[in-house]
Amino acid sequence: MNNAGTWFLKGAWIESGIEQALVEVIEEACRSSQVNQPESPLRVLTHAREVLVRKNETLAFMPLFENMARLEHLDTYDDAGLGWLIESPQVNRTDTMRHYLSELTVLKIAATVWQALARCYWRAWYQTGSIPDSHVFYVDMHDKVIWTNKRSPVGFVSALHEVYACLKQAFVHGRGGHALFCCAYAADIHLSEVVVEVARLFEQALGVEIVQVIVTDREGLAVDVIQALASHNKAFVTLLKANQYSGEANFVRQGRFRQLKDPRTGQVTHRVADADFQLAPGLRVRAALIYDLAHPDVLMALIATVSREAEPDIRRIVGWYLGRWNAQENSFRDQIAFVQSQRQLWFAQQAQRTRSSHCPADHRVGDSPAGGHTQTRKQAGSIGRTGTATSYPRRKSRSEDSRFVAPSTSPGPAGRPPRSETPTTIAGTAATLPSTPLQTVDQPD
Image (cartoon, rainbow, N blue to C red; front, side, top):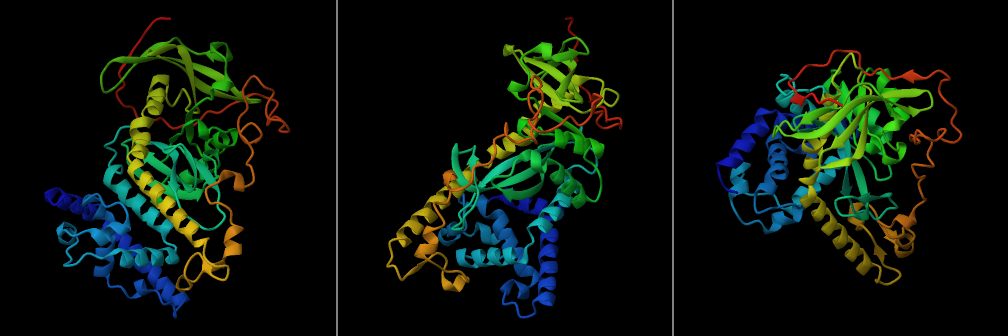
């Protein structure tokens, strides 16, 4: 991709403040390390700013050239385009960049980097308020396959339909489809356990409270999440699970069915009605009854803690949820190439470890002594097969875990008394939400 387009991307990289933000984070971490560990041998501590910029640009722009997706590809890259773009006569090779990344890991800058990037992204796309419904944000998890020779939680990687050792990356996306913030968690974490924390960390990074509505998939649904967000005047939107209702009889209708149009095509796609739903003992929430015209016999139910005073038209709230695919899910699908690359690396490391296991008993496997870590074959054998779910204690299922919402037809999670004898309604955010045009058509019952 040796063309002018790469220079436009570099211009955006600089203009948005990303280059400056990354360098400042690294330099601050280096200064702190020099104070706390003056004898530290890290080479990054002595890098000039120009060197940091060049290495960061190498990592950022290498995928634009010859489809490089892994650091190993730098050793076989023989063109001049990347060197021109980073303004260097010679491109750094694999060992140099791998060592650089390992030293950044030692500096523990991941959280600080994401906070700095969030501020850059927010200023570039959302601070001016030009994106409609910019108070609505999407939170979901992406599975990042990893290799480790340590005992590690595993997870089902939906993009591969297989189980691997991985990290759960909780992303915050805006209504414009931009990934604004990320936090990494262990593979056995559940979305409902981190929704509130991720929203708090996102606002903490920006320095302003801008999240009014959070939209997640069904995995984020939990009574604790709804109540915690409501206590911070934040609304929550998600789908009910199919086993939580059997039909319209489980809902109290608050209006007639009305038609909802796809804003891109102008065609009617859904029939929607406002309603109330008893989510748990003592907790009633607003709901939307949804029929997709492509599947008119299937009832979908959405719940929202956005009050009717803040948003009278339930169709607008449904539109926020339907927008989740364009705003967030498509972003995850775009990462499938990297997921495949991570999977290939996993198999390569697994094969290398298998070969090492056949060495003589007095030999050691794992990382080299130069890397500061060794282990005997016996120790390595005790680790178990990385990526095998049966190697680890079984987590409670959703039905066994009292944190998750039980179907409304049941008396509630076993062992958990009702929070209140008097039914309550989560009012959601009390602020008046911004108004944007919505293509709708009234339809009689």
